[in-house]
Structures are given as structure tokens and as C-alpha cells.
Picture 1 (cartoon, rainbow, N blue to C red):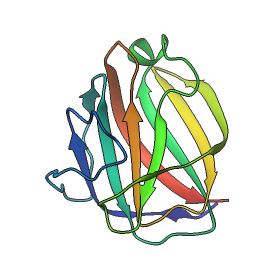
Picture 2: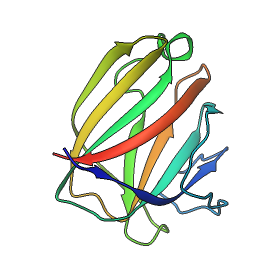
Picture 3: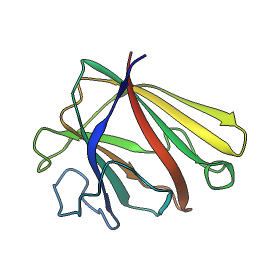
Length: 133
């Protein structure tokens, strides 16, 4: 599965309406570990958009152990303004040492992919990677 890079990423700390584009500060491609709270969103601008995509979200095991499946809601947008909901084909939760991996597959993403978090406890995200199927 070839990896797909992302051109930029951003965080919306209070994203109460995830289908509406909100202003966020774009960050350079290298994402650092960060805590995501309830109603926060992570946005990624993909380098290319294949027909099917797999995303892997690596979180600390302590922060992710209480997460219900699906841990995040998926949205996509062509221009980063209006988002539509994406249906996940599957969510898988796996242990990898001190991390938990949430792996999701979905079809037909647009240029922007948004992960919206709605659970009550903070989630410490270490990295997010994308690949084709």
C-alpha cells in the first residue's frame, strides 16, 4: 500500500459545526503529537485523492483505551469550505506497544479530509498516515 502525503494539516479546537468550513491555521506537513478535545477537528489537505483511501491514526494507548468505535467522524471537502460526511467501510482498533492504532478505510475522498472528535475524554494523537488500498 503506497503512502499518500498531505500538503498541510490544521486543528480546529472548537468545531461545533463540522460540515461548515472554519478558519484554521495551516501547519507544515510534519505533524507533532497533540491533544484533541471533544468537538475538535483535525484537517488534512491530501497530496492526491485516490478512489479508496486508508487512514491510520496513532494515539497513546492511555488516551485511546476508552474510545468507542468509531473514534472519529469523517468528513471531506473539495475546497475546504463545505464538508460532507464520509461513510467508513470499516474501523479497526489495534494495540502497538504504547500506542493504539485506529485504521479506517473509505471511498472517494476529496482534497480535504476532516476527522471530528466527539468523545468526552482527550485523545493524544501521535501521527496520522494515509495510504491507498
